[in-house]
Length: 162
Image (cartoon, rainbow, N blue to C red; front, side, top):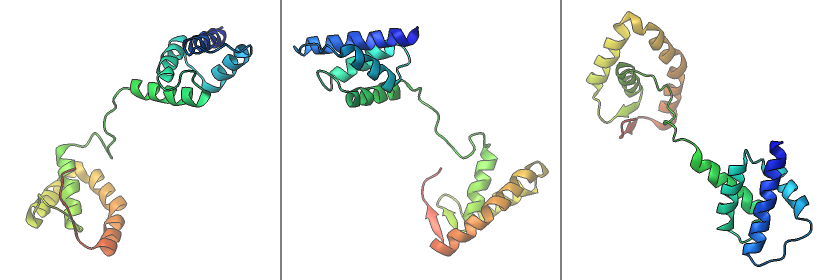
């Protein structure tokens, strides 16, 4: 039932587009409407109206390509703003500080850390038994990357805080 309603909405929007452009509505409009509804995969009738409204700003009688672009723009604007994707968004400050200090001691120098500060942070973090798993993960998964980076690039300085 919903497919029929969407196809009918596409049909009505096409008639409106042709009429607004002062063009004759072709006799094959039913076939074109069904084809567009099938090809574009509208989710509901409101989306059909919104996409056609946007598409008519791009072309008087929108083609499938114009409708597809309008739909992409329409859907992109309606996606809720997401949080920034991070390596591990649930890091505590001490874990984050440890990672920065750990990398600092292995060749990616953090401009805001001195060697002695980094050593102190790493020693304090690694001496706490509750951080054992995190420490092992860091060493197991990142030591070879740090060594490769040092070989390839030498010592580099990270100037901004992540």
